[in-house]
Length: 463
Ligand code: C2O
Ligand code: CU
Image 1 (spheres, helix red, strand yellow):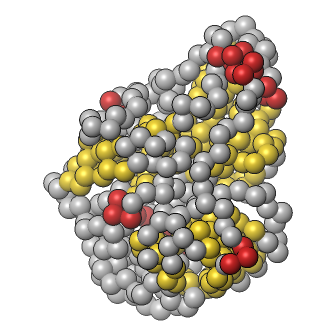
Image 2 (spheres, rainbow, N blue to C red; image 1 turned 135 degrees about the vertical axis):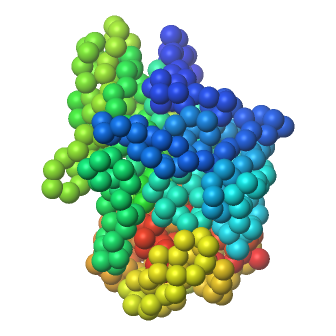
């Protein structure tokens, strides 16, 4: 333990409490949750100030503020929250990346009933891992997430290193027309390709917001890619940044951020060293696509704190079961295109198409008629998912309830790391090794929501 370093960091540490930079997120839900005091999380329609064209009508949010609150939890401490559904359609909450009880996982039919408008549901669980996670519906997901239902979860560990500031970034796009109002969430032709992209890009529901942080200070940036479609290539301009955690789990060896690709559902924790001089600006950039986009800027304030990234203590590892590769059972998962018509049934918002499949089975998700599990696993045993992507698209594959270690890609050099979402490239073959240590039915799907909703969904069963 680098005690000396830690003491240095704590001296004069300014922990920014307004996680959205003074945009009103630090409401009742911003406080650490205690085990007993069940908080209420209300889903509702709202007007949102996203563009300069005036309020965008009929957005959807959680809670009282315009933007969904950052939910703060503590590793190993029971958390309870009552969902109140103020929408005129059913919803549920899925806690993306949290390895919790299957009954709390938020998947209609598979793990819980619909929560109809006017109804509620009590979620209660103990988050086992510290890190950056997020929450979103698993019903009519394209529409509900597209209109705003996605918030960030911070699970704290008392042993977390102290930073001079913390900034939580919920990165997402919106499908808005020139008048700033919602347009159709998807085009079938795009759903069969990379997905339908948003037209307005935001961080915490604002276009290129600017945050202040102490000059020469160390900032913990907690980034969640909550968009339904867009893959990002992240870089920081004007400051040094280290990747300290990815998808909730600390990376074994921190490394400098350099054109790192993350997909919908993934998270990245960066240690950002602010510029020395007051007023200097650093920027978080997306370099994917034809022109670079500035997502967020950071302005240095005050006299330099003269911190050094190298002095930052390592994050404590989460307690995850190490796969036993000598006794592993391999299971194939082959992604593919599909072309079946699909009736627009189901009250969780079927898109009416099957464009995708896993092991040739298209499951349109949120459906009243789930197919059989694609694999059955025995609790406590090690499995290796042999995933192949012969399609021309990149797919962020997300597994609920369990953590896997990606290994042996034929396309990318992998760092040893536990994750819940793997961004698989075209023609990539990868192995995801895991211990099936959490019983239940766990969904395994692409997090490009149009792919998820048009067939690229399955589930596995742990008994
Ligand atoms: Cu964020 Cu089923 O996932
Ligand atoms: Cu996909």
